[in-house]
Each structure stands twice: as structure tokens, then as C-alpha cells.
Amino acid sequence: QVHLVESGGGLVQPGGSLRLSCAASGMFFRINDMGWYRQAPGKERELVATITTGGRTNYADSAKGRFTISRDNAKNTVSVQMNSLKPEDTAVYYCYVALTTYSSGNYVYWGQGTQVTVSS
Image 1 (cartoon, rainbow, N blue to C red):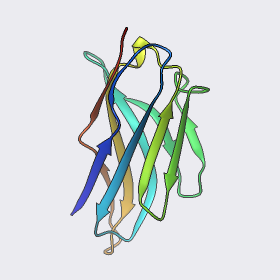
Image 2: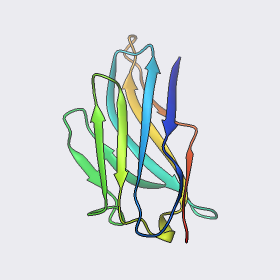
Image 3: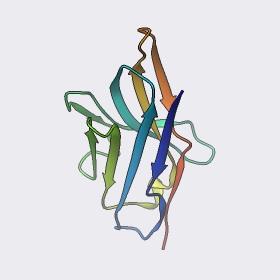
């Protein structure tokens, strides 16, 4: 069983910052990619940013230059620092973890989601 616990969402004014974090726990052999997606009301879930075990990152165009993803492999955590937030960043943010189990299965797990609201 694998659990992901997210934290850090909330209400922020335009131009403000938030930091989201996600911690993975449970029984698994290795965590591979980690990242964040988001889903705004009436829209499909979309990529925000991903990071590999080696630290290679990938960002959605909307996140480039404003968001920074990072991970701590020792603590099995992934975070995203979001700066210069805009109202269009309002969404539920979901972390995901791609991992390999001890039986060599590969699975993707999702967090429960955390609300980010950017509004004055």
C-alpha cells in the first residue's frame, strides 16, 4: 500500500506565492518520476511539472519561469514552488508518483488533491 499526502494549498492573491509538497510512504522498491498535475473546474487534468530521479525537469509552458519543481529522494517527497501566481492558476493540484514495487511492477499513484485559489 502506498500513500501520498499533499500539503500547502490555499488562497493567495495574484502575484503571490505558494509551495506545495507531497510525501510518499509505504512499501515499494523505487520511486521513479514524480510530478504535479492540476485540474480547473470544467477542464481536463493537465501537466504542471515533472522531475526524474536524476533531477531532470519538465514544465508546462504555463509554468515555465514561475514554478520550480524539486524532490528529496531520501524523504520521498516532491515539491513545487509557485511564484507570480495568476487567477488562471486556480485549480486542484495533484501530485503523482511513478514507482516500482518489490515484485517489479510499475504503478502510478495520485495524491488526494489540494486546492489552490488565486484571487484578490
